[in-house]
Image (cartoon, rainbow, N blue to C red; front, side, top):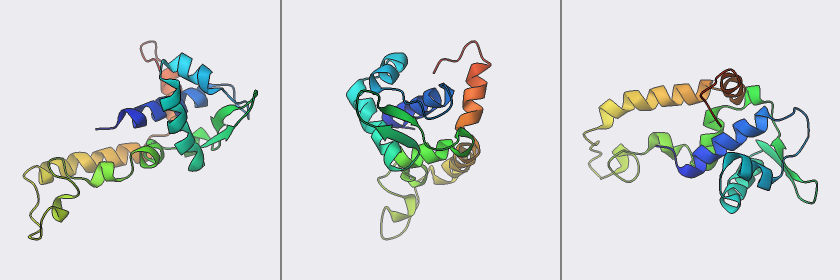
Length: 146
């Protein structure tokens, strides 16, 4: 459901939140290496997050990325909205666009009612799950790797 860009962005934000607190910047090459993600692709994703004031970005030899917000105040929905957009939750599973916008007769797709329940659950989950919670959960688990 989520694009690779969005999944990489979530991983990177969780990674940055798990780093030493404060304004210490982590370079893109370090993030890319530690998460085993392609550097140019990851750089574009992190710039999107910086434009939306989720991350702080600085250039130069001591530049890099850090969280601009407290991880307790960053939800998964913030990241998804920034990278994939809210359309992720409103678009039809079968058609392009929203179900009611598919044709002039406003007929919904056959999956609409079933998917509506799942969509509502995902929005609630992503709205309530913070980066801080995910870092704590990952830190306390032996099987989760960011």
